[in-house]
Amino acid sequence: MENTKRRRYQGADSTMIQHDVVILGGGPAGSTAATLLAARGLDVVVLEKAHFPRFHIGESLLPGTVAIFERLGIHEQIRDAFIHKPGGKWLYGSKEVTGDFSKSDRNASFKGTPYSYLVERSVFDEILIRRSMDVGADVRFGVEVRNTIIRAGRVVGVQGTDEEGQPFEIFGRLVIDATGLRAFVSASMGKRKITQPQRMGIYAQYLASPGREDIEAGWFTGQMFYDGWTWLLKLPRNRYSVGAVLTVDRFRKSGRSPAELLEHLVAENELLTTGMGDGHERISDVMVTGNMGSTSGRLCGEGWVAVGDAAFFIDPCYSSGVHLAMKSGEAVADLVSDAPTDIPVPASLFEQYEADMRRHERSVHRMVDAFYLASRYTSVQKMVTTFQGGWFSRKFVTFVGGDFNANSAFISRVRFYSETVGSIFGNDSSRDPSNHPNYLHRNEGESDIQSADSVADQVIIEEALT
Ligand SMILES: Cc1cc2nc3c(=O)[nH]c(=O)nc-3n(C[C@H](O)[C@H](O)[C@H](O)COP(=O)(O)OP(=O)(O)OC[C@H]3O[C@@H](n4cnc5c(N)ncnc54)[C@H](O)[C@@H]3O)c2cc1C
Image (cartoon, rainbow, N blue to C red; front, side, top):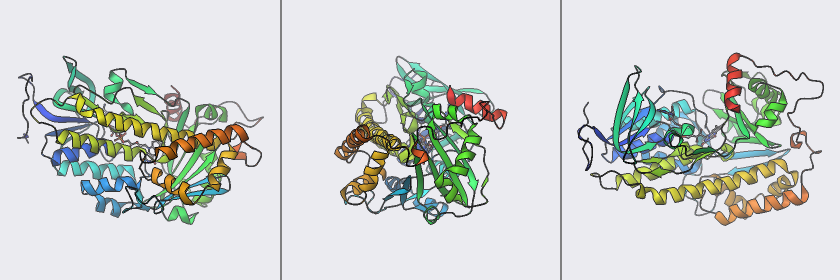
């Protein structure tokens, strides 16, 4: 159907069909922006390479995002489809640290909804994008964007291929880059860089029978080991998301393929062995993400702005990704909706947005640094487990609930204490094997030939390590 809202703007080439906004990528960032912009009457096109439903990692959500579900009009659907999540628990050796979302600061943004959800992303992302379509966004699946079109220094549109592989061009007053880790626009301008080259994620889904009550009750659970961590969380239909983040060096020294390493952890890591009970069965391929941290040098320019992972991606130990994706999609949509509609959207509109996002990026990075210090130093682990309850816990819960910019003094203090305690007292690795720097390394006498389960496995390893 021809969209009657389409218009030409001042200075536009007379041959161009102009849309208000062209959004690249229909994940949580792109679909949030699309819904809010289309609901305000703008002419929005979303170009999405995949056909939905499609698998995506990133299943543990934060309470700060619930307000956006409400605003998009999808909270009820989300509540019905997924697992209620009251908070997260971390195992530091035999000790536990609990982040209960109901125990946040009085002024936490999510005080009224102190919970979130564990979601199957294939279903979750489809709920979000269907909502965009319901309110009038023109969503095109199976369409891959391949080039930006730049005229007089401004991004005016993109070129791509449609479902039949036919080339097309499309133009807008604004291009929103929501292509996730691909970061299409900034990468094509040479402005994307990896910030965390030494870590990787390995994950899969399992069928299992309940092993721990907290996991059954919807708590995100994680366990630290030296310079890495495992996670286990329940998804609908008795499936479990299982994964590990570790250094590429440790992966290489383990002498195992990703599938073998994950199976090794499932057999040996305390959280995974106790959490899944007997008789678990892997029901997906083992997947690998080699990029565990990257950022775009600029988040906006003339004619374009980046949202979600396309802006930056930070190690997922605080489950911050989907929240930041939807928050950034919302922020950009609000700015664009309030701007004049008869001229191209100026880059200056996004100056404050970029500054705010950079503050989020710095805050989360600082806490990630403290997290990995705690993984390396038993002395820092002791400090964290001792500080449970009271002021420290409330600030921590407020942060991990999604208020990343609310407590900068607390965040600086956490990192400072972690660095100081770690450097003074170090790591007493004799207490627990998982605190030992050689945890997961190949044992003496084991074969040093790395075996891969399949050719696909080997390809994934290579992709992860390049
Ligand atoms: C191991 C791991 C664990 C994680 N765990 C969590 C977690 O527990 N909680 C959490 O909140 N986050 C987690 N994340 C992060 C989370 O996956 C992302 O932050 C989130 O998906 C970002 O959403 P997005 O919309 O920006 O990008 P995406 O969800 O990646 O969506 C981007 C979309 O763009 C499309 N696209 C890409 N290129 C093109 C193109 N050229 N043309 C057209 N379309 C294109 C893709 O098909 C995709 O649908 C995790 C990440 C990893 C790697």
